[in-house]
Length: 154
Image (cartoon, rainbow, N blue to C red):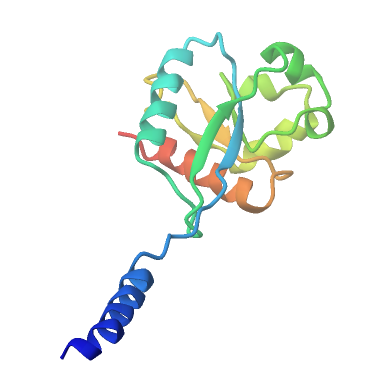
């Protein structure tokens, strides 16, 4: 019995080692969100972002989703810029659909925007949110998940 002890210890160690396999780690996918930091709904949007993050959102691959507000440029200034070239974001929340006037890139995306007025307690005002057509890959998928979460908020 004692001569089989080393073999039993080796087999036990191998079995334990196989069971302790570290799960794969995924880099977070960052959703850059363009919005008005000083809008009447800014506080509510902050809450919705925190609620979304508290659900530990992930892509089907397991990569965690992180929402970060784009703050490199003032809202009104950014709306006047070449949005599709100068600003790279994966999600947009406008204060009002009229904010898209004069910006062809934003206007083109309004056709697939969802109204998140309930999420930001702004109803009956229309608060459009969308994933720009320029967003692609995992970032676009993560942004779509975020926008859908906002649209489904009761």
